[in-house]
Image (cartoon, rainbow, N blue to C red; front, top):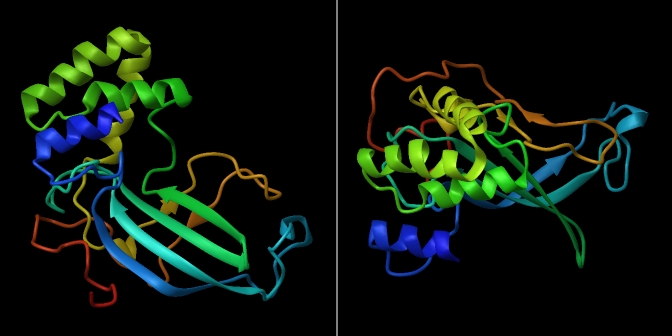
Length: 204
């Protein structure tokens, strides 16, 4: 709650937003998740069956806990809620970088607290180079800063062409999942543009 209040104060939002992924670029409530007809037996676990189709809700978003401009360097996220049966749903979460900046839950929370409400370059630098090392140590803080810099150093041309990776292991017969774009295209964008994340996505 403290992280959310700091972000609310920094952004001037009228109410508390999500701790992360506050701004959605796309929300679809009539999506369908379909498993491939040739799904290997080792991946057939629970509701995952060859050819099985389920209604789903999909949300694509920026990682930040404040509603910043789409051109701001940031990670992007994908959340899919699969409705398997009445009273049974499963959430599949992924981001646009293969690995997490944090090695465990403690580091994840420390990073969130260190950067909460950091709305200017000076505030963010203080959070990353002072508050974060004090919380997790200099080595871990350096690794986390480098991961975040690598993950956010390019401009996104469209979320329709992004690749998303699940951050943690999934108890589903394999370690991690990856979501690939249906159509190939350039991932990088030469310059920032208004609504630059939407090309190739359904209209709002």
